[in-house]
View 1 (tube, rainbow over the protein chains, first blue to last red):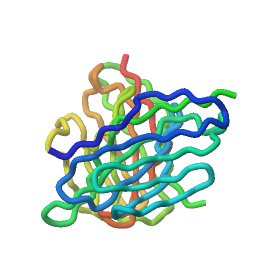
View 2: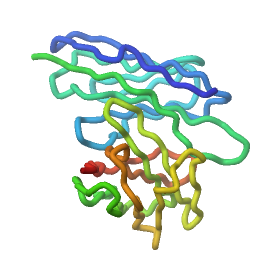
View 3: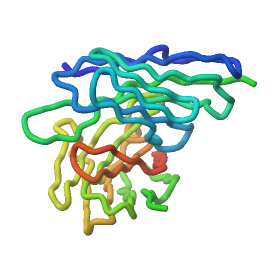
View 4: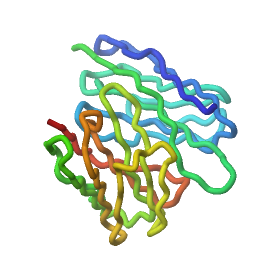
Length: 113
Length: 112
């Protein structure tokens, strides 16, 4: 069964303290892996898409990497405004075109000043 | 800016009273989705439209229905809301079925 697991469930950092969030997945053929940021009471905001092992993407203090079994979201020198829930989702190959995203339950990040 | 808009942002309804949530998009995307997200849970896909072609998830209750009258608008109808239907409802769009999905701000539904 296709599955996405994110760890840790919650992470508290001091401002400037770099860390990484993990997204491990089991899927029968990965089409793409997506990272979203979700603020309380709002919809997910798209961050990155990764398609193949070894791929990396960066945006400001965030860097996403992908292997054949997991993805990491590295946060360098975080600021309080980086506090949010970070969601990982995978899209798998099935017979015929499909679009279904399988989401993890997210990592709740709190960055303290 | 191109975007996904959901109205209302907050909706309160009574147990069993039908409710309709609205989603519109200025992205001109072909695909529109409805997700349900309960507190601290992952978003759960209810159904999606590829253009006018409706695709229902197997485990979506019959109580949930959707309409897409044109490219820009999509509606979620909950025929007889129960207490368990209280959740955030998210609309998303994508260019094609395998492309990145962009989400709206969500509608928080409360059932009294």
